[in-house]
Image (cartoon, rainbow, N blue to C red; front, side, top):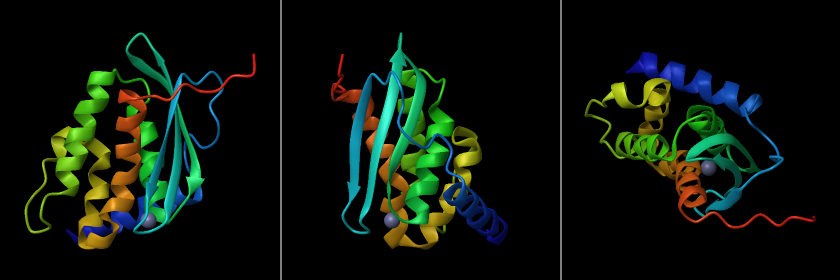
Length: 150
Ligand code: ZN
């Protein structure tokens, strides 16, 4: 467990310092806002869906290192996936984050996202880690029309 915790901290720091898929998304087809009042994390997620596939995804916002790193990891993980695959991944990550700390997690469904399981050691931060995933679900199920100037 301590190895995973070390890796967890390393990955969180790296993704917080250099968030992947950061910024606006030209040609986005949808977006969603996420807010975690417990910590004050705010997140705007942009998605571009083409024929049932997430061909583009990016995020912006302000929040703690965990929320930012989790959003960075999430965008990397779902880019190129079909909507069905993204929902499956949401379920797998949600299950992982809500598994009690003394129980093993099934890493086969989450891949490198398993590092996020380290957040279970800090129950108050679990919502920081899950914010990006809930925002993704909202962007995929109820994407607000993105305002266009032309
Ligand atoms: Zn947070």
